[in-house]
Length: 409
Image 1: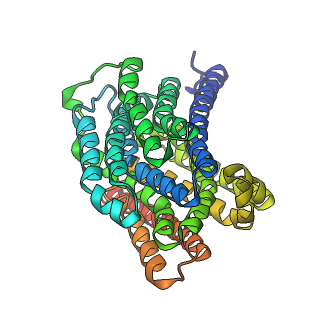
Image 2 (image 1 turned 30 degrees about the vertical axis):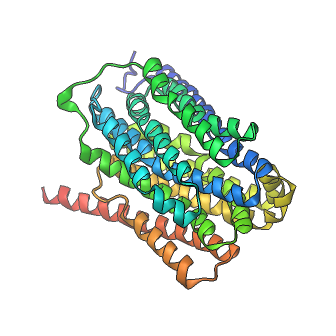
């Protein structure tokens, strides 16, 4: 029963908060599983591979993450669309997105293999892996847009197992770089099948189907977010000696931890952001900022321990750099919240500040600073801060323009 004032009664508020809490816990657990499996791969690699092969594996994982980002963009686009138009369909757009991503990786395989000193067969396997993981976004987007977060958590766990389980198994079996990627690709191919079986939902109305432009905008923004956050790792592989790039790869484990630890906040907030809730944005930014502050402080106090767990005793010396890596990840986490909010609000070019920041990072690392571990690390931190500031300014400008249009009408 509604409260006499017209607001929901206390019992309804408590029930709603409990549901949000349970949903948040389920998504957080699924995210933790994803992160744990994602961390397990470089941790096993640090113990099973040489420093050179470890750097190669880290580069493969970085490329896989970047190439697979359109899957997250597809998920976001579908979620935003369904939050506004329940039961809207992705149609053939999801499959087309996956096919395009796989073809791009395959076409660029010879160049990537030459520039980054990777086996060509690894890049071709990576193309197949990419298609399998990208198409999963259409099922996850349906569940997120419908706020079916418990089902979404199961889907996230399935995707995580498919993305990382094969890599972890390959390393544990001592399959080497190529064998590990082969096993990982085979496992990833099972993801679409499992998601289709587990999460059948109404196909939706063709008239309300998501458009290619919506998917392209979300994919571009999501791709830009991952490119800018992984660019330093790829630059380290390109500019530093093999052993040093391997050490840098271990350092970025902490960056990715700070980046992805609060991802549950954005996942839960996105349907509300798509419906124009400013309160949801403020709460999301506050929670992510608080999480980042805790992680940066913890890294300053126990950085050596963190890197001992991430890479073993050979990488404890990285502890003095831990706060910088953690700060970079925390800044990117805030950036990702704001970019998702801009996508949900229908901004035309939400990725522009990120692409500009990426170009500046590449230029600075290549020509403006020494080719050293510390220089690339600080360039990455500066890029994160610059991209965040530019996105805040773009968001403020968008709100002011909206207010002017409202006043004029």
